[in-house]
Image (tube, rainbow, N blue to C red):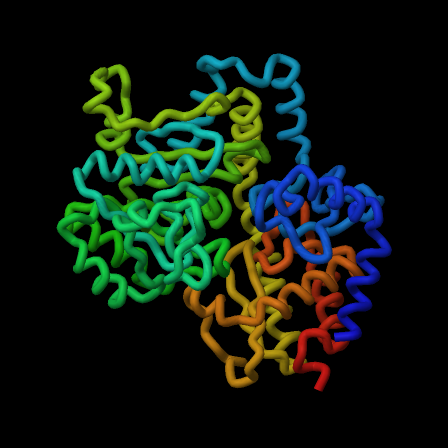
Amino acid sequence: MEKFDEYVRRYERKTPKSRRLFSRAARVFPGGISHNIRYFPPYPFFADGAKGKRLHDVDGNSYTDYWMGHWALILGHSPAPVASALARQVRNGTLYGTTNDVSVELAETIQKLMPAAEMMRFSSTGSEATMYAVRLARAKTGRRVIAKAIGGWHGFNTTLMQSASYPFEAEEGPGLVQDEGQYVESIPFNDLEGSIKVLDNIRDDLACIIIEPMIGTNGCIPPVDGYLQGLQEYARKNGALFILDEIVTGFRLSLHGAARLYGLDPDLFTLGKICGGGMPIGVVCGRKEIMSLADPVSVPDKQARCAIGGGTFSANPATMTAGLATLDFLKKNEREVYGKIDRLGGMARDGLGRIFAEAKIPCAITGTKSVFMTHFFSDSSQQKRQVSNATDVAMSDKAALGRYHMALMAAHGIFFLPSKMGAMSFAHDEGDVKKLLAATQSIADSGILGKAAQ
């Protein structure tokens, strides 16, 4: 791996301030970071600005960004309509600690775009939103068991921290009491028959099925035809709720979310990321009869009321303003925005697949619309392997993916958070994709990904 070491040394030479900052950060943050996935070896660069498709670090380097704030920045960094609206709001206040008019406007906008959101509650994170969703499901059904997909990621809330990371059958780590997981069952994504076998064993105590319509963090994997629809039908027939976790997909796969794209009608669904306009947000949405279980006015008895709240910063006017500006822009420019980012996503997937196939580097490219991810395999017999679930992804060569992403950063000024999927924004253009493909060709030719070296 001598050639890869050269990429690492190049990265270290161009990021000395980040190296020093990381040493300081390691003394105040566990691992030097405040989100586990943001660490990558030898150390992450420290950003000090971003605009459009470009991310800038403290050493003066500029990167074309495909991570896009955990895929949340569909319009790019600091888009003018959002930045100007946010600046006006900040002058008027960032936190009122009471109700505000712009929260009603944002909620009404979400409701019009996603009619299944008959009522909703804002929070500050997606983890809170999914926590509230499963609590509402238990309150509505009087049942205990939650079903989720193997590799499905629903945030760091305790209830759903099961089969979230590989090895999926193992405990997620100390600090989680084993009893907390006894009412959570895991189903195989994209395997309806296998999922129903698991669900049949818990049918009488099944409160809900919560599912990402596209596996996000664990592989960028779209659903096969009929899978999500089959789960929804099963839930309806057996008195359970069907919950879509659209924190990644909401307003990303379409203006109306994955529910519209796949013809689904969830009882509850969660949103986040894009509808916050670059500010912290989580939203739990759903049918009025379910959401009303949390209404402190119509259900004043706390013993009868589902205990979901929000938090000090929920529905704060800054987030509400940024989110409303983002959705207003998407509504007014729907065809232009989604036509462009979906075209660029397809261009990237097709181009990457062609380059690695010609280089005889075993891999699969997953994704749909504006998102994509590369999965390398160490065994050439897996060249045509279908990646359809998180276990398939776990069997891929993550080290090779890390080398690929580091080489893009070090030599070509292109940023993917190492080992994670990429997302297009409205700020990207075809020239960026061509540069990504040219850089990828150079890296494939270098031999650091394995097969091309032989």
